Image (cartoon, rainbow, N blue to C red; front, side):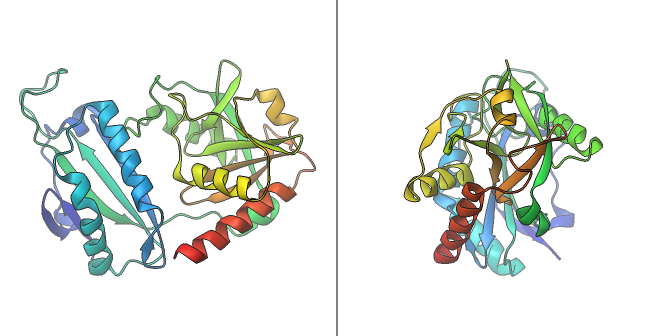
Amino acid sequence: MTTVYLNGEYLPLEEAKIPVEDRGFLFSDGIYEVVRFYGERPFRLEAHIQRFVHSAEGMRLPLLHTVEDLPAIIERLRQENGLRDAEVYIQYTRGHAHPRTHAFPPEVCPTLLVMPLHMHLPPASAYEEGMPAITVPDLRWQRCDIKSTMLVPNLLAKQQARERSAWEAILVRDGLVTEGASTNMFAVINGQVVTHPADCHILGGISRDTALGLAEKLGLIVRQEAFTVQEMLNADEVFLTSTTQEVLPLTRINDRPIGRGQPGPVTLRLHAAFRRLVLTES
């Protein structure tokens, strides 16, 4: 039986309920985070909490004592659920308010949910052979740096990828690659690692930042600049980063091979360095 945390209580998942007037349910008026455990230790928890705070500030969500409480809540859930190599999902909304109105309620009764998740990892062959992707228009709003629960454009993009037997949907805004539907995108162009800058058009990922730091330690030239779809298709290598996928090669985009159509040396070096880092920190 899975134990979750909801508004001060630790209770079975089946008993966790929210009011129908919760603004997260009615308006997607909330934020979220996903933290990965390697073994029994959360990976870069402080960085996730910092991004959580950034999202709350962008949504004008008062956090009250939530930030201080999160590490202890997560640790208790780890113990009660015996978590190993799992994920913890954190969702925070503006809470329930009556009557339903678009403007913020005068008093906030926030809802905090923290629950463990089973991870859905890529197959081992994905890192040996690479995965396919497609490009789709980036239809999201202008504050993608906020990790909002309003994910409809991302869901539609993911569904398009599934219907075309692709692993990820690469989002394109005004001809420029921004990120994946649930990942950050990188291209290796003339031996240099290039990724979209962490501005309002992408969600700056913890794994993205980790990969950038590792690339610099490996002596690679890193450029945080937007690149076009054509530059991506002509790149030596393309890879993505995410909490569950770490550093994953993309070897076909829109049915066109990238480079030699197999994981490239830069991607393989970065993934190996990522794995070494995980072993060290966990």
